[in-house]
Amino acid sequence: MSRRGCPRAGWLDCGGAVSERESEIRVYAIVRSGGRQHKVAVGDIVEVDKISTAKVGDTVELSTLLVVDGDAVTSDPWVLAGIKVQAEVVDHHKGVKIDILRYKNKTGYRRRQGHRQQYTAIKVTEIPAAAK
Image (cartoon, rainbow, N blue to C red; front, side, top):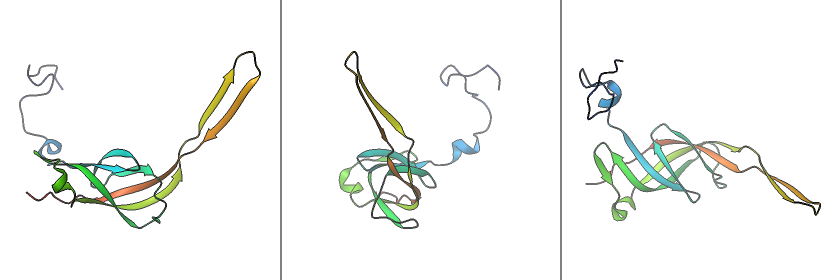
């Protein structure tokens, strides 16, 4: 790519055809699971805190906080109350180990503790469109 570009677009190429990636409409949602928020699109595999009631292959529903469908952004809680993102449970696993070390100088106080968080991997299968 050349170093020439449009002043408004930074160093992006101004001329030419729109690439295939830019022409597709990107649909994604912000969902809540386990006290955290995740940005998901159809086909994404996301690690969420363990869903103990779900088995591998089960379908789970995630509550939606925001849906972006191209230029249309839906954030109205009344509309989003009826929209649930569908996902399939792929795997249950543990995360990487973190070490918690406590140390106080000159007193001989040392404590070591480890922790591995339990996660569930889910694959997003459907993001329903918001009713307009």
